[in-house]
Amino acid sequence: MFYSRIAGTGSYLPEKILTNQALESKVQTNDEWIYSRTGIKQRHVAAEGQLTSDLAFEAASRALEAAHCTAADVDLIIVATTTPDMVFPSCACILQHKLGATRAAAFDLQAVCSGFIYALSTADQFIRSGNFRKILVVGAEILTRLIDWSDRSTCVLFGDGAGAVLLEQSTLPGILSSHLHADGSYAPILSVPGNLRNGLYEGGAYLQMEGNAVFKFAVKVLGEVSEEALSANHLDKSALDWLIPHQANIRIIQATAKKLSLPMDKVICTVDLHANTSAASIPLALDCAVRDGRVRKGQLVLLEGVGGGFTWGGVLVRM
Ligand code: UT7
Image (cartoon, rainbow, N blue to C red; front, top):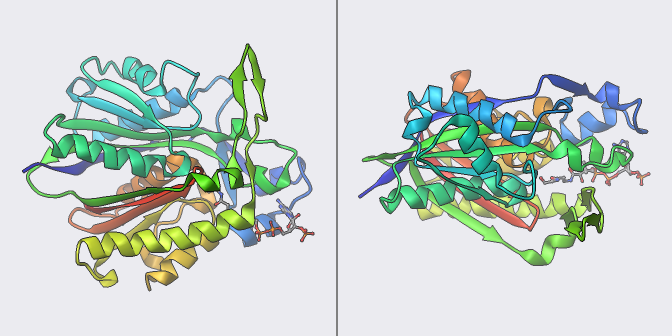
């Protein structure tokens, strides 16, 4: 019987920081509104020439180092992203070349803000089946390039970054279970509707969102998937050491923690410093908490995400 475990984590944030105060000169907004409605203080923004694969490269290199692995050891690379460098080849193939991971198969996975949860679950299946022993799972985004900087209802919410884990075969679990869901009927409440056609980008190049509808949906499904993950493992809420949710809005995170009767000091929050980095937010938060010593070996951690699609899911992990 094979299991998978997280052997190392890594993350990367672009150098440039955009504070709420700096946004006040771009759109009619203010720090008080942004912080009180979302918990966000600042976000990182990729430099002009930086690509998603560059962010992914830094995060992946750090995860490999933490796992005492080299790129040559990697069997598969999965990059969860909605903002790949180009239409094709995939960001994962570009990353494979940058890392020199010549033995690795590589593909992208697109589930927007749930992307990392979907990718981690996918990687877990490949390891459990015995197909692969070491898989790099990366969430990397430059979402700020899909933002209309004149739309105050969306431009204050997002940031750029990347997070990664090296998942490896183990005799002990690791990942206890994963739970994935989708409902495409909710597509219109969060989308970038355009596409390339005949050499032109048609149909709307910017992210559009019905904030209130997304908020309500997120609170509902994150609560449900937490219960589902715990009950599938016959575990009580009290067994959880940490909740690491997708970092979109502190009020969504607080509502989810309340449903689980978890005090906020058992919830990893990075939304204040990173804003919503989509598929990167969960591995970024995980890496921060591993590196600052909060998340430790042997602890029980629930990772959960929700995003466009709509997609949502949870992964229960013994670190
Ligand atoms: O990964 C998943 C992706 N997205 C999310 O998870 C986002 C989920 N939704 C949310 O986080 C919240 O719905 C928002 C933070 C987007 C909005 O918060 P809200 O409490 O739902 O505010 P609202 O949309 O109801 O807007 C309240 C007011 C409006 O003004 P009026 O109509 O009351 O005069 C907005 O025009 O706030 C106004 N407003 C702003 N004011 C200052 C909207 N954006 C801003 C802004 N600065 N940036």
